[in-house]
Image (tube, rainbow, N blue to C red; front, side, top):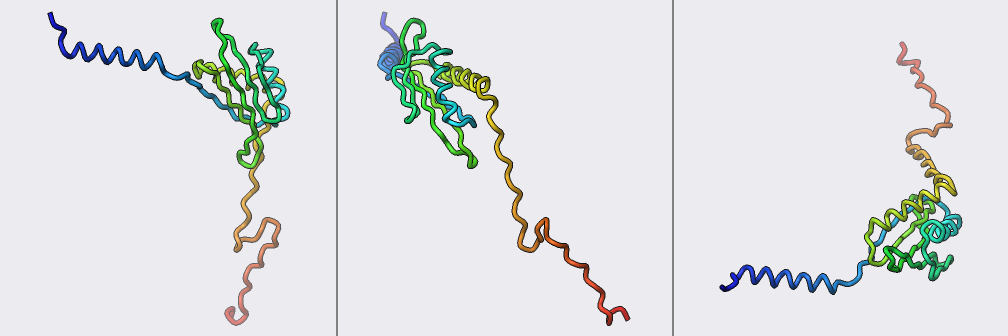
Length: 162
């Protein structure tokens, strides 16, 4: 008995997809979080978080460049990861941005790790300072400023009063 043509096509398609999936390059997910803390205070807390709380093995770090390379063990296998700590300016104010990558792990793992890092920073450093209030807009040219004297009311003309 012969195999119908559509079944042969489906079989070839399934085999092709299996081959492509088997040779796919490793995926590097990436998670980011920006917080309003000074970088100098955040750096030691972030490194301590990785070692003490997440139990990763630090393989390289550079405080000036703002990166940590580490090895995470999950299910008995080692996975390479990195944490970048950089200063960014948002609304005229310095913030710190964390970029976390873990090779061949799902992105939810990185997001959860950054959430735990934020919780640790809030516990150790307190809540980030609120953004500064924006100054009031300067008055228009025709409008007097808040401290300017008020103009006198117009006086009736003596000739028009008669």
